[in-house]
Image (tube, rainbow, N blue to C red; front, side, top):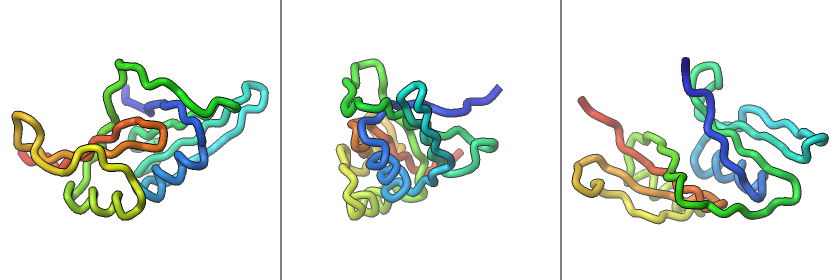
Amino acid sequence: MRLLHTMIRVGDLDRSIRFYTEVLGMRLLRRKDYPEGDFTLAFVGYGEESEQAVIELTWNWGVTHYEQGNGFGHLAVEVDDVYQAVERIRAQGGKIVREAGPMNAGSTLIAFVEDPDGYLIELLGPRHG
């Protein structure tokens, strides 16, 4: 078994694709409209779906906003340098909601960025050991 993807609902698919590709550096892997169901799916990731988990962006036609609720936490992305990633994301117009620094009660470097729909993405420095 392996994890294939995580699905999140988005209110503006093109805006979300721009964020995940231009700000976070992922690639658009595939996109398909489903007219009979009134929705579009787009898959983004850093590598091929056959090799790693990706994110499925689901746009239900006519829906522009979702309530986040309190069950979902965040997506996590490993970066080479958390401080540099924060500056690059900020320069691309990304919203940083927690600056780079050590996590609470630990030494792992982290930061948080928010996507256009309010989903949190944790940036983690490389794990050693």
